[in-house]
Amino acid sequence: MCGIVAAVISSGDIRAEVLAGLKTLEYRGYDSAGMAVLHQGEISVRRKMGKIANLEAELDRNELPPSGLVIAHTRWATHGAPADRNAHPHRDDKERIVVVHNGIIENFLELRQRLADAGHEFSTETDTEVLANLIASHRNTGLELHAAVRAALKEVHGAYGLVVMSADDPEQLIVARMDSPLVIGLGDHGNYAASDMPALLHLTRDFLILENGESAMLRADSMEVLSAAGKPIQPKTLHCDWTPEQAERGGYPHFMLKEIHEQPDVLARTAFDRCVDKDGDVDFEEEFGLTDAELAGFERLRFMAMGTSLHAAMLGQKFLAELARLPGETLNASEFLYSAPLEEGNALTVVVSQSGETADSLRAMREVQRRGGRVLGICNVQGSTLAREADHLILTHCGPEIGVASTKAFFGQVTALYLLAIRLGRARGVLNANQGREYLHDLRNLRHHFEALFRQESLDEIKQAADFLTGVRSCLFLGRGLQHPVALEGALKLKEISYLHAEGYPAGEMKHGPIALIDEHFPVIALSVKDRTYEKMLSNLEEVRARGGKVIAIANQGDERVAATADYVISVPEVPELLSPLVTVVPLQLLSYEVALGLGRDIDQPRNLAKSVTVE
Ligand code: AGP
Image (cartoon, rainbow, N blue to C red):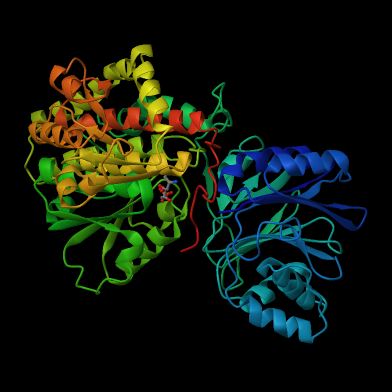
């Protein structure tokens, strides 16, 4: 939540590059944006409520002077409503220190009172302005800037990723982090900082990742990194395998549409480019670090995640039961924290997260580790907190996901979970080598079915159903078995980007309550492919129709029985049952995209949402 970009270069002007980086981060928050530069010993700031385009317009009207020392921010409001005055960067009252900050300073009211008593004046409602004044108060005691920032942070409770610039220290930036991501980019002519790697890919692909409590002083040609204890350290560098092009729209009108269309490639990137050995067996990359003997020793698996990743995790649990005959449970990570602290026993916890920075999922991971359990992270972002702190790791390699509504990340997660279930099945002797290869063969074959999903006839079917949905206010997504998590995901996608009310239910639950809602204005989107739940789903469709409800069915190509019952049919190819969620989810993603488009919604940046939720 919120995005930071900052740069210090040896000579010249870096404003345009920082602004370009900020635009790639707009998905992290888009209530307001701002930029500050240092020029001839003075700090100048521009801030604007709304999207970065508003800031750009402001910068056109009221240009900032050229500078090689620049910080910028895009905001998702926590303290203080979205407004020009509450936008970052924030200055101290003497305008010598300026700060951009992600996270929440929990004791800001107490600090504010103390600073106000000492004569500091405040003009905003934000915790970040308090931070700027706190740093200034330490700098004024004669401490060097880096030491002043560290002294201020010692007094702070809460989460932060921040960058500090000072008018009295013209060639340096100070960066620090605690529970909010911050990366340092290493360039040939300067150094950079950002909350996410995509913001700096046009400047560098080499990064240092700060850990909690660490801070750094960045100059154009050098840097000093201090550990949480204040000792100089040399953090490991990371070369990012994402390219700058991957973080661009590539001719698509929206990132979401581009990312939906990238899913066939995700299959190769997640599975076959990295995770399959020469004998055709699943063999994860080095970071996985679990031997077959260790895998065979686990008595159960626990999956935890939030949002879309939670739906992927639910499928992971089902794959595990089918392919490895191992019991599992799937928990909402935020709820886990309030459950009774039972013995971990011989369990492996799988935490699934696209960003690897979701606060609820990270807290759950740390709680499991505190209780002595082991965590396997399934994550898309190299160097993220989950990727670094999990005991074991599978990277999904989907490339940067920019659209706030997650699509290809779900696809990569489900693929990785399918591979994990095969590996576990092999390790536990449930699957022999040939069976393992057959399941992998099914996955590889899926690629050929994608053409059908993106054919014009299918897109036309989706558009017709979408046109109908733009006229309703509420709807129900139903699925059974493997299609239940897909129903939940379809409903989440639709509400996120179209703002229509939608609920996902296991279809068997319909008669236990939701059926009361059904009438001609309350449609049902039913996942009714030919799997073990097919006949039961057909009965559900009849029940909906008998009550005047309209049915949009996701069905296998040429299924006459479904066609006879449904008002709209969206066809999908017939694939092996375990893999059908990877096929049925695609038209649901496209359906919500088309509904949102029809309703004129802001698809990549839906209201109130942010791409990664780094506060609980
Ligand atoms: C999905 O479309 C969402 N925007 C959201 O539910 C997301 O999946 C959730 O916040 C979890 O994020 P993560 O995968 O980065 O942990």
